[in-house]
Image (cartoon, rainbow, N blue to C red; front, side, top):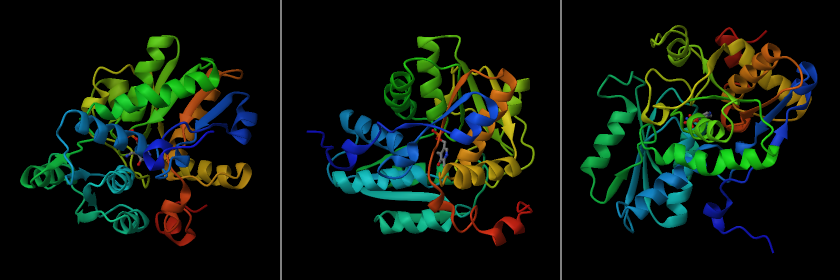
Length: 323
Ligand code: PMP
């Protein structure tokens, strides 16, 4: 019998999908780890589960306790599901720039949601810092602290990357991923480099994020902006510290949108915006490396979470992104 044990038992073990049209165009195997098939709908279910179970093991999270987090949405959605399944309360602080679908879903899942203005990390009213303060003030509460809690990248070191290794039988030339907290990129990059130092580990970065310039020049410089949600960073999080990075590729929103529409209409895959950045970078890398290489990236979440934006012509036109 093959029966999964509730929500928690269903996290992970996602398929690895050949992205047919882009593989044909480039002559490379462009493979996407289908994280949108996690039970909470995104790659962040893995980190949410590891963070909660790590806090349980350390005796920090006790029955009836509250999990507090600042999140662009997907981590909160994963945490809210797991809190329901394990009997905890969930308090989420989210910037008001995130899609209404994600905010509505968090409330439907029973999380208490506080929206706050989107301000940079150095501002004390930044959503991450607000969530940290709330966790301190509440009794019997933990701060998930996904950006700097290494249980996040451990989830990917112990599950995502070994799954990809088994699925490809170790035949990987490059790993490319955008970073929000960096947990997905870092956990997998650490695992792959241990297995085979020749595997190229490449950061995909949207405009308006500082990692591209950091990799290229050693300095964080923020230029431009992006409509993609959940990725890009203006600092090196604890999850990204000491992690191998061979190179970075910057992808703009026009390319990301082109990619997700091709995935939808040629491959039948309905994807979120960060997938456009990831697959856009995988395509650029395939062109640079030449045919015959295997490049693995992440399909972080699905398109339904962004229907009012990325799949709404009016909204795209208002951003100058509908060609
Ligand atoms: N894509 C989406 C849609 C996300 O929500 C996130 C997480 N914020 C990521 C990518 C990046 O994942 P990570 O935090 O592991 O870097």
